[in-house]
Image (cartoon, rainbow, N blue to C red; front, side, top):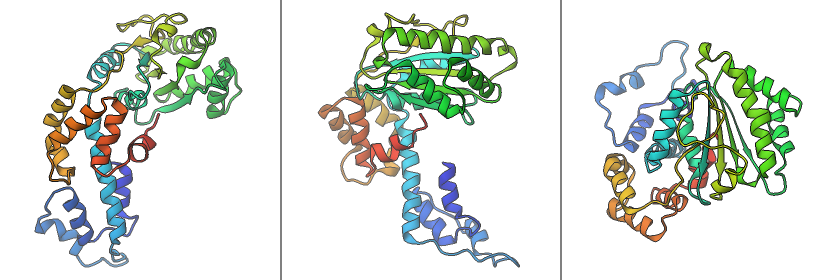
Length: 321
């Protein structure tokens, strides 16, 4: 359960009364026994405030948070298995850094995948992390230095940024994601990788035997421009322990298909059933979604609608990178 949800359930130091717990667990399709209410029904101790009943609106918000968390977890198991497998294999082998190219057509779930992979990075919980979105009117190299420098509170020079990130890495994992990397011109991208990323990785490698934290860079291509990127960057298809600054190319993102959705529903049917509020068959509805439009983001968006949630607001809006 998300920490934010727990905080809302506890409602600060006011506690939660028995009725609130009953409504909450009914939403989870769980039944509380008599002894579960013991603490709630116990007379208040001296100096302790009597818990105030939660309003129906507050309970609805709590239940919606729980539903969002559960659906997010279930969606995290839908497709992208090849990319997850290679990433997990690589991140366990290469130290202290890893560089990964995520590529595919527009709206194929690149940002969603970045965030799924983030959870597989060692010590990701307290990681220093930053996303940079390259824009058509601001795609020069200086934009990258300025974005990082502003976040780090230092001057916008490669040397200053490297030193600050190195200091962060000494105490925590560092995760960077450069989105729309396909917009950066070839020479600028090469300069960024040579003058910044490779030097930072090499600096960290000197202490790699003493550190378990990771330096992770995601290069995110939303235009399926791998062929263009290959002109300015060396790319590898297998983890290279000796050169972790070279991007490891994950498999190109593909559209969803009937087999993918049917397998997912079969494995996740119990969790999906707890959230389902329709007389129609879950299996058939999901097949119809993919049949109508197999573009990954479209499928994910339509699945959220089936559970009365909004993909952009409830899922994408809460992603860390």
